[in-house]
Image (tube, rainbow, N blue to C red; front, side):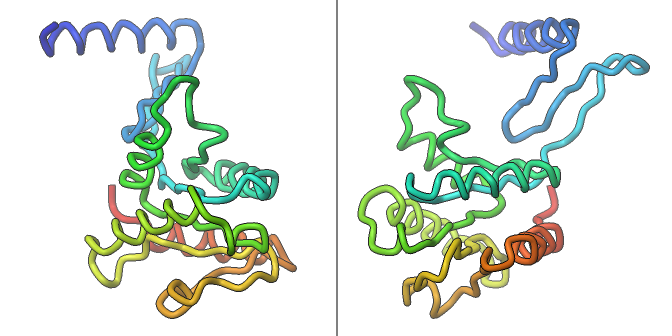
Length: 183
């Protein structure tokens, strides 16, 4: 199949969904919305934010996901974005690589965990090494009064989402809005 027929097929799919009144999100690009006056309205993607966490903290991180989404950002968490049958290790790496920010959610549940959570943090730190020194990518947040690993604490300032959730959330949102890379 050549590029032109692929583009034509994609356009037909987008137009069909818009005709049914459905929005169409194109990862990394933005969202097309049906618009009664203009036919179609496009909103470029907002800051993409990868949320790293352990399963025991899923409810708290879903609360964070919802708050970030309500502020107009595009959060990414495996429980909400991975599709059945998807190669999840590759999908997670791609999501980290294409995100503007990586939010590591630390808690007493996560600090001594082995497996996916620390692997995601190591991968994000590796990605950050390829960025300018003053660019913010990894943002540690504490969900409770846990210790932040020394390797992170030594170089990166963290944000507390406790005991005042709204205060910590406001600080996180303000930083993301201020430091978001130009699209």
